[in-house]
Image (cartoon, rainbow, N blue to C red; front, side, top):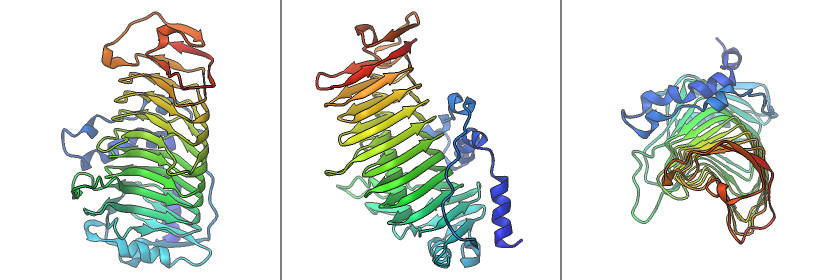
Length: 388
């Protein structure tokens, strides 16, 4: 079968996104040691039951298709396939095209990293695994895009080296990511599993704009499931960010611009943020126009949602439950609107608290486990929400 026929077959055979969300973690279980924390991961019923109607935008690229096997990739999990991946990418014409990755386990050196180019799709078979080679670097990435445009990453699994990484004294190695996107425009990341990274599953910054993340499971990373630093016009749909633990901040999603940078216009819908060591989502300073819609934020080791200084933040139609500390915390001059949400059993570290179901418009002391407004917070609007 020719390369372009092969990739078209894979594209047409891609499983429905609902099924992907149900099965994506199960595909990865054989990679994990028995008894690991990962063994308990499962996709949220709320996600599986929802209609995943969002269709990510198709990016612009040429029609050329190159198979990484034709450039020397072996895919046996032993041979270093980094150079072969780069050769396939570099062989695309100026109009771009598709680099296809068949099923197999491909050892990638994240210190060298696979550097993506503009106008390309990296299309991985659902059974393709990119395994990070064990290293001791403080900064390393499996996939890397810097000042690129019209890029798409789809399918397969990215597996970090968190369990075998050599952690140098004095360094947290927190910048070892599955995917690093810097200064790019018009990028889509979809239909993939990324986990076990020594840093983040996915990280973006340096004024990235028009980034779409859809149908992604980012789990059991050390620092964050997803970091959004300097960026604008970001959409995150139908994804899970879970089981982050190892080095601070340990959140599912962290929206936290560095230095004097800003992050704005971020929409997060139908996502699950669960079982992270600290917060489900952290919104921290110089952040504006963030909406969380139809999300499930549960079983995190501290608060579900924290907004410190973020403005025009909206939390709506979501479920916030079973978080160890407060469900939603406002602090530091934050402005936020909460409406049409459901809260249950937050601040559960104090023990479960049964109560008669009720709806409430505004705030009252009886919901302080669910919503806490620090004195520095301003412009907080609490609409009608349900409390179980």
